[in-house]
Length: 331
Image (cartoon, rainbow, N blue to C red; front, side):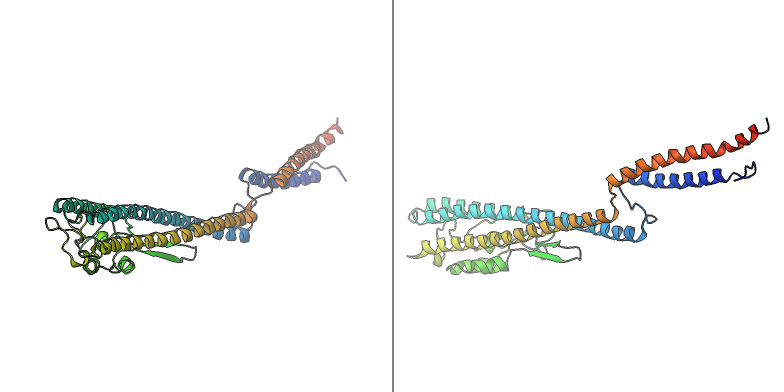
């Protein structure tokens, strides 16, 4: 190869090699710093597009999982209220049984009757306050002229169960559903309370109040009338006490049906939450398979390119020194 001061082919080759190494080194450094082999569409258009779609699904599934958590808390709150109501109903049964032991004492009957009415007020208060973010599955529907719930906006819980928009519903238990579970309880007087009552205690056939206005508690029960004793024909005579106990037991049975329904919904939500978490993990792993870099391979490549960079610089230095060698020929 002839020596020329106008053209240095070796230097050009060295520069091209150095530029190529610099480009690979910059790309590898980006992989090391981000941990991604595909961080932009320029790296791999197909993989980047698929990963972005999958990332959208991850975000959607995250919202689904949050909704399931909210649904679980709503159902759990309602279940706690229902269990507490059952506990109060057990106290009502004890008080109703005591009526049979005090039939000859009007004063005692009034005292026990007042106690029963207070228990019923507790039931309605618990039902009203079983509201979770506007959803109340125990109180009366706010769609009518009255509303039986503080801050209640609906008595139906709707929640999304999957990425494709599948929706499950937990319908409130007030009025018809609980009334069907209660039945008449063997007491003709209770049927009126079930048919016209909107408060939970009335739906259970235990109070005579049908006013479901928020904050209004029952002022009387179906068993004992203040100053009059037990006047309902269904609760007098030889079978009167048995009928009263049967009515309360029917109410307890109805509330246990409520807890059973809530338990079934709890299990379904739990299963969907578990499945949702698995879907999120699988989507995330899928994105990683498309875009995540092999850091061990990236580290090895970075070391190799750094070595090549140094050699390319050395080669360019040698190539550039050829002009100085020409100068020495004229000295």
